[in-house]
Amino acid sequence: MIIQILMVVFIMFLLALAYNLWTHLNKKFLIYSPANNVRLQNAMKFTAILLVIISIIGLIILIFANKQANFITLVLGSITAAGFSIYLGNIRG
View 1 (cartoon, one colour):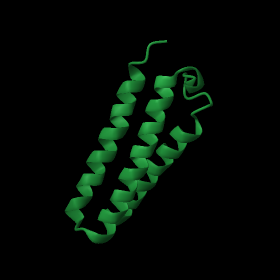
View 2 (cartoon, helix red, strand yellow; view 1 turned 45 degrees about the vertical axis):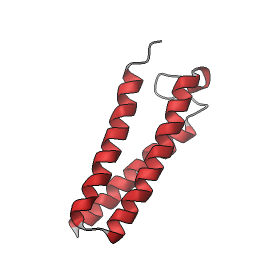
View 3 (tube, helix red, strand yellow; view 1 turned 90 degrees about the vertical axis):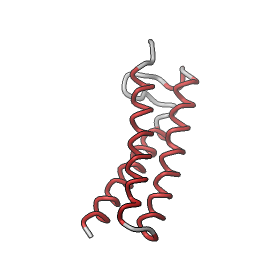
């Protein structure tokens, strides 16, 4: 039961991150301005959409699959967030 609760919290975190990325497409995002950087704006859109898809898959896994299958959601969500963070860290200017 505790794993299911923690997975719901993780999925909500992924959705909150996707919402934050999507709503800051034309606003200041951390120290960057996505409105002036098309590549960053596209990366933010792609990451937000990918996080929503992973969240939907995670909910399906949570409802229909066994506990061990939740590892798929954890890995995909973590790799996606880490990949965007690495991209963000390598932006020049």
